[in-house]
Image 1: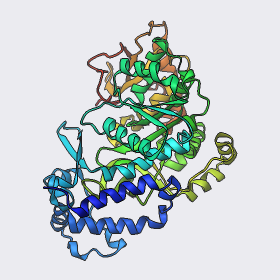
Image 2: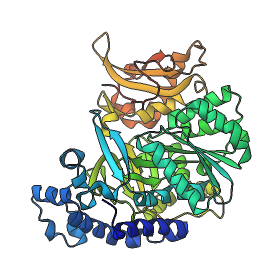
Image 3: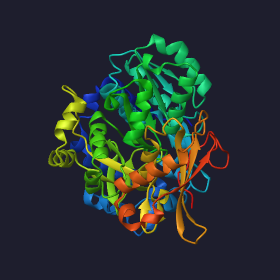
Image 4: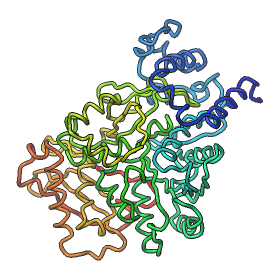
Length: 502
């Protein structure tokens, strides 16, 4: 069945809007239009998506009774188990048909069962705005010839193809941008860097943080002088520390993390929901230096990913400390519970906090003059709660451990990947075990285990007040197990790493 004229017109209109409007114009609606757009999307989903109206019926809600924003905000949460897995794929699409969609991504949850997320090219246009924010506001890619190297895995997974497509939309809009798609193949990445990067003013690597770090280190061994290529980074898929960011940039000769890096907050189901900006990176750098202030702002002893978002594109709410999002996709989402712990801050709330904390002079120093700070709201994301280990009643987070591994005395010996677990010791008392992956070049330097033990204990004591107060002194020193690079049982190559084991 061919797409109707109305359907084709909608695709053309959304595409034209992205291509013809400036970034300023695309972001002009923001808060002003957010609630109207959210209500409109809810009403369109109720009217046009068969599964959603059936879902509301099953939840005891009359679909025809929803008329106002307050009623929309009271709708039952949409969950993966009760909605996504309970209704046929086509019934969850607009019009009850897959014909409006022309591409599909696949994700796998904890069970490993695939979930399909269809979309149309028009659904990519709002996501392309997130990439434009990064490439324009951070990298000035509208002024510089730029090579974008997509290092996410290519295939049915959302990362690689979706990222490539959004970058192609930027090039089509007029950005002097060439997109290379080697995927997660280091040899292909190096071949592109050596052949093409010298012909561009800057090179952007886009990928999963641990993999990109490996690429940089392996590239140094392969003779690539990264500082010659004005390297920038776009990350997604994992929370990382500011120490990690700084150590990575040391290898590429960068001294401007707020303008040379950006992390995306994205999911297979919702697309890219928000992005780091120079403003959020500068704020996060300050908070990394002042963990007590970070704890008072975020409520936990770990530093979350901090991004800005466009509320007229993705409408966020919080429920019991977890994030809920609504947005137009191939499978429209209405109050979808994405199970990430986190929270929301208005731009004014963030500014007031930074002023009270005495951070504004630091922010001005990092950002410099003339940088456009967009007054968009912020969302902070810790990730899933099941990545936390309980030890003597203290919640131990992978983010706390990462900082201990990223100190200068050990950074060249370990990859940054580890497995955190609480085990029963030989005396029956619990022990904190951390299995650490060594770099291929690790020479097994004497005292590495002791160095890591000391560094991790110091950082846990500094960052985590529960660890500091709950854990007996004699149990604070972690047990370190060193494993070779790519050890198949703990650090298999080519798959997303899991940092905790129960």
